[in-house]
Image (cartoon, rainbow, N blue to C red; front, top):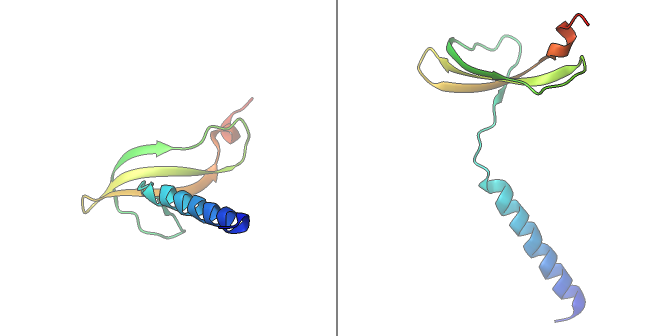
Length: 87
């Protein structure tokens, strides 16, 4: 096997390994909220957002139980809490 074929094979195996790691992450991604989307919230379980000292638009996340008893995860855009500070 020449050097070029060896390098190509090693690169291909590396890409396959990276793809396998990316697919192994089974963390469900939240549904992106769009205006007018019905949520039918029965109970909010958590509200999370990244912390930032700047007044900017961020992506927040809400996990809730809907009226059918299903746990839902939705992300939405909002102004950071830094925008509400009076300092």
